[in-house]
Structure formats: structure tokens, C-alpha cells
Length: 239
Image 1 (cartoon, rainbow, N blue to C red):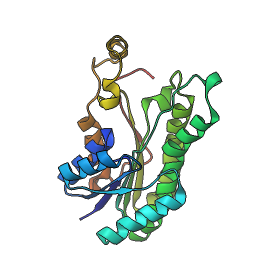
Image 2: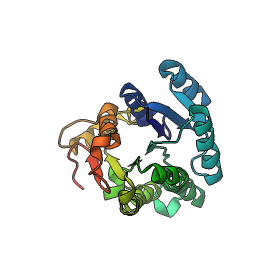
Image 3: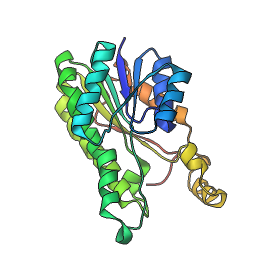
Image 4: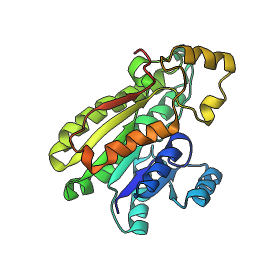
């Protein structure tokens, strides 16, 4: 049974990805950082193992992945880098702390996690790395220079690591979701939500299951000829 690790895997899109991977027969581990109540509820509902560490800190990632290896008795086969935060502000008002927090959690974390797991993937000559970007990493967004920069950086990282890893049986791909129905989008004012939907050709927000299904495809052994690519799952939004 292959081991799949999902960062930020206990809530939102990450929760949907974790559940879908388990239903498809993977031995799933969901990472979280501080929200222990949500993590424990998620574990009770799904029986998926949850482990806490800060993905923005390299040493924390080394420790966390080591704990997963010890607990499950194997190395990570599928890594989904899903953890992310927002700290929105117009750039001329943006606090440097908010810049570094977003870059650290959304982009540096991808380096940290990949750097920890890829040596064993290279040894086994198999691995699947799936990095969650965003439509805003492709087109930008007002008030999100930090977030857009991090998500755009993931795309370049993905292409470069894919080139380095292809001969070792490791694929590295990205998914760039558009607006997806989650607890976060549920808080958007109705008038703003209607304006957003007006710019989406299919006329609705995406579903978590639609993102999870794409992860299942990229994680599958039969997706071995797909690497260095970005799946844009955004309802046809113009870029």
C-alpha cells in the first residue's frame, strides 16, 4: 500500500484530497500545524492519521516526516503540497511579516517537504509530487502580491524539479484551482460572490471533489508520462 502525505490535509481542499486518497486505497497521512481541534475531529471522522508540524520550518519537516516513517513503517510515495495561508493587503500597506509568512508557508514549505522526501523517492525510482498553486499565481490578484508571488513560484519550482526527477521515475506536477467552494469562500459577501461567478464561464465555484479527482489522476502509476505540467481547474476563467 502506497503512503500519501497531504500537507494542510485536515481541512478545506486538503481534507477532500486526504479523503479521496484514502477511498482510493492509499495509506494517508494528513499534516496540520496548530488547529488541533479540527485535526482531531477529522481523524475521528476518517480514521486518517494526523501529524502536526510547521511546514515553513525545514527542521520541523525533517522531524515530522521521520515520525510518519516510524509510525507507518515506510517512506512517502505521494506528496501533496497543499498547505497555504493568506495575509491580504494592498502592497503599499503590506507588512513585511505578512510577506514572509505567506512566502514561508506557501512556497518555502514546498522546498522543505520535497527536499525531505525526494531522496527516498529517487532510491525507489518512484514518486508522485503534486503542488497546489492557484489561478492567482497565473494572473495575479489585487491585494495578494505575497500570495500570487508564492503560487507563481510553485509553478517554476514544479517545472524545474520535474526535469531533474523524470529519469528517476518521479513525476512533479501542479494544480492551479480557481474559486472552490470551501468554508473560506462561504464567508464572501453575496454581492461579491455574484460578481466573481459572473467572471467564471461555467457559472459557479468549483467543488473540492473536482480538485481531489485531479490529484488522484496525477498520483496514479498510470500518470507516469505526465510531469512538469499545471492543471488549470478554474471553470474556464480568463487568464
